[in-house]
Length: 400
Image 1: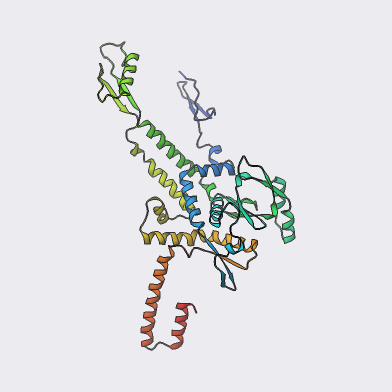
Image 2: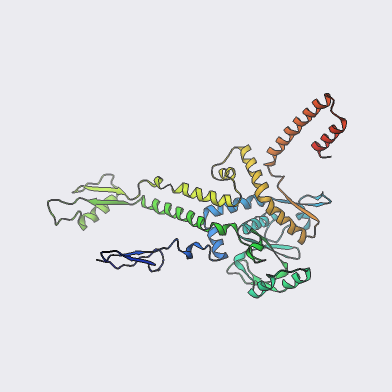
C-alpha cells in the first residue's frame, strides 16, 4: 500500500525524485541542500555582506584582518629616501568629518575582503562607500567595461554620475563616477568588471553554510537538553490499556515542572533527557574546522589561528603576526599605496607596520645576528682578512 504526504524542509518545494518498489510503495526524495540552486553561491552582493555580518566565523576573520590593517602608516619617499613619515595627516587631518584615518583604513580592509572597497574622493574628503547602497546604471558599466588604450578615453568612459547613500533609509546622493576608485580583493580582470571584483568569500559559500548549520545544530540541541520525555509502562495483562492516561500525563507534567524535589507517581514511569550527550555531536570542533578553512583562505596560518582561538606565547605570537603581515597583508598594502600615489599625486608611497610591537622580536634577532657577524669578522681580520673584503662586509652589515 502506498502513502501520499507532503514534505517540507523550510520551503514549499515538491519532491523531485519519486520511485515505486515491487509492492507498489512510493518513495519520495527531496534534494534540497545539495541541489544546483543552493550550491551556486551567494545570491548577490547584499546577500554576501549580510551573511558575513551574521556569521561569527567569517566576521572573526574579517575583523581580525581589519583591526591589524587599520594600524597601517603610509610614508612618502622620493628617490628611495624617506620624505615624510605618516604623510596622510599632513595632507588631510581626517578623511571625512565622521572618521579618523584608522577608521577609514579599517573600512578599506573590511570592504575589500568582501570584494571591493569603493573609495570616493571629492576635494579633500574621502569616504569608503557601502557597496549595498550604491547604484550604477548598466549602461555606464557597459561603457566602462571595455579595453581602453588612452587616458582620454578612460576619462570619457567614466563621465557621468551614480547614486549612493549611507543606509537604506537615507536619501540618495548623486556622485561623480570619475571620482570613484576601487580596491578589489581579486583582480577586477578576473571578474570581467572593472568596477566590481570577486571576493575569496565567494569560494567559501558552502563552508559558511556549514558553520551556520553547526551553530544552529548546537543551538537546537542545547534547547533540547532542557526537555525530557516521560513515558509510562503498558500493562501486559490488559491488551486495551494505554501506557498513560490524559489525566496522568497532565498530573506528571505539572508535578515535574513544580518546585518539589521528589514527585511520587502511581505507576512506574521513565524519564529521559531528549539530548543527553551533546559533546558526542562534536559541533564545536566542526565550527572551529570551518573557521580554520575561512581563515586559511584569507592568509591566517595555523599559528595565527591559534592566537585567535587559543592564545599564544609572546614571542610566538609576534612572529606569527609578523609573518602574516609580510605574506598576506603587504600585497594589499602595495595596491593601496599605488592608489594613494594617484589621488595625492605622490612619486612613491609605501605602507608600513614597522611601528607595531611585533617588530621588536625581529629587531632583537637582527641585533643578535649583527653581533655574531661582527664577532666573526673580527676573528677573520685577526687571521689576515683582506681590507677590501672587510670594508665590503661592513657596508653589507650597516647598509652604507
